[in-house]
Image (tube, rainbow, N blue to C red; front, side, top):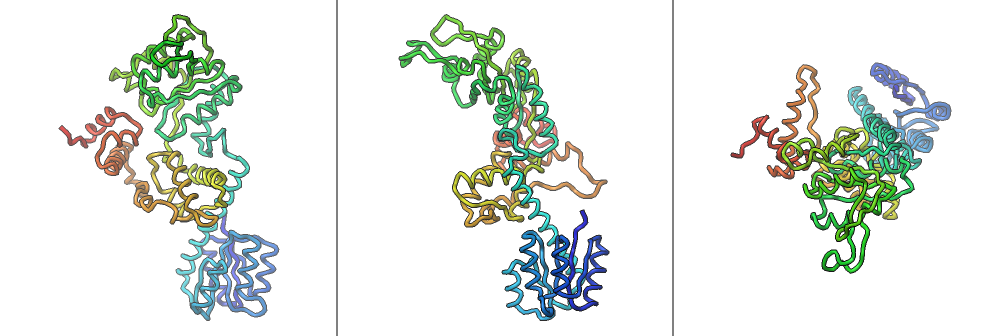
Length: 453
């Protein structure tokens, strides 16, 4: 929408010059030649920015500033005066003025200040709207917060398949919210009243994982003093979520395949089979097809798991969600910590928008949680964010259309970037990129970046 600007000055020539210059830039300009007329305009119309003379008869610029901020806290007010002193400038800024211009002013300076002021107004209003949406629960889906079109289509697909008992494979980089999506599917399924059991396959050794999943009978091994049902049994009539399924050993993969095929289990130390009725959802940050190709994952199990695949995009591909997520986490952690932090400084939000988030949504939440913990008042500022954040902003694309890079160029550039920020550590780089070391090695070979013999 066209920005609406109110110009107030008791010098008709100043009003005329300012109005002409601003209209030439495409703004909707209303003019008044007295402070009284300015107040009347504020009562009947809404504006994004006010340019007002400081010294006027009866109603001065400070009065205009006070009334404007009472009417709309997000409005920007720029004061203009021929009697510019440091004291009056400081007083105006303390009272909430965006900027202070001394006469005789330069039109290019005015245009620059107006553009910056309107950008701030837009950010303030977007922030207020986001806070309202988060408070009212808009754009939240069982913990998944999004307004991104790709994510909304993904959630629509998830709702469709939730009504069935189809086995699902969720893929995506670490920190993208794979377990949240699994819980969302469970909550929208006919099994929603049953248990949701989540297991991280990469967090347990093979024997411990087998014991956790299948349970054991009394005396099955030293220390098994009592019989204990496994998590698969516990998930009966509910949903079993196996995270990081690619980390499961080949031996355990055979046992899981049997559960899927036979719909029954055997506890450790028992010959008796127990029927189970579960919905299976698995997740991984690796490419299972690559894992199958190099012999680390069974092909028959892969086909059983990937009946319907859902891929969660990294946060850098859904940057329109960053402000919404930031305010969601701000509210969440402010409530948890008992702090009245309800706003994010525009410059801080701009810094968050420019970061590339190798840790995805989880990393953004950690940054906001840190900011809330350090915040001294009701606003999270740049001072509460890590200083290293500004040094790790996402490289930007060139503006000239005829020099746009290919996808391969961007991939090569990003791989270089991630390697540099991980001091050449390929395991860490592969983790950030969401691929395995073998896939990374192939890409390094492809782009001639493999310097190791």
